[in-house]
Length: 329
Image 1 (cartoon, helix red, strand yellow):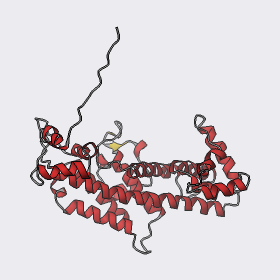
Image 2 (cartoon, helix red, strand yellow):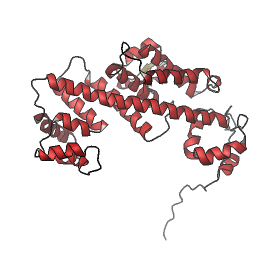
Image 3 (cartoon, helix red, strand yellow):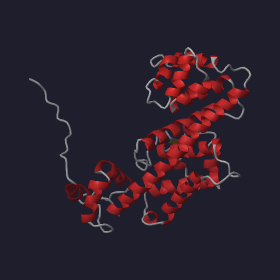
Image 4 (cartoon, one colour):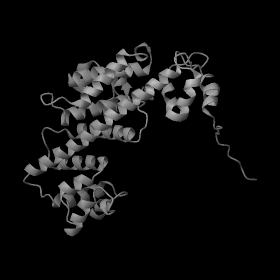
């Protein structure tokens, strides 16, 4: 007899059915916006699966209904998340650029480095550590093989040069994770007293996570209290989750111990710190990204409905605000 596996199945619903059958049934109110106005929002401006994830920031009562959650609050959170993603994405792109600047500057002054030979050395080192996912010069440069590729110009030059590639060419076609690997390889081989490899690596990983989420338009302001099970022990953060470059800022800003190892806070804090290390110069012209982030944080802390909310979201933003002001003010 053939066994039948019953999979969880949910029927598709229209916007009005979602409002009546799910949102209202779970305690979501429509005091700040009418149900009639909420329907076109779900049909034309957003979609339920992405929009409804923000409800996880709100607590439930004993009857499992959301406490003080209005549909308009979810709209406000969705807009806030969008603005935050946009700012952080621009910051991560700047970080990527200035990581390349930092590497190439060090290479240019390092008399031990041949700009071409280091590519072969790097590939050998990489493949020794990643035997299941090896790379070659061909696999790297072929990304620009298509004439429509932004790297096609580099590709044609390398082909014309018999596939002899220099670091200043390779670094242009590296993805963020590959840049992280090369950064780690290079500064382990040629130590720089100003660069703590493990701390920089941790910040780069956080930056990559935020960049990927923001670039794919994935919500950031969800599961804000999630952290590793062993994150805090005996009233202290596990050393595995402590970044030595970031720790003085966390302490100086008075960031709550409980939020430091949470996934989302740790990653955004990593972006703020790495941007400051690589790009930010308070003596130069105003930094529009930092100013925009500051204005957004003021909005969260001063404009309805956010200040009245007593949940993980406001705990998160109060601590982000503290860290932002300590690092950039």
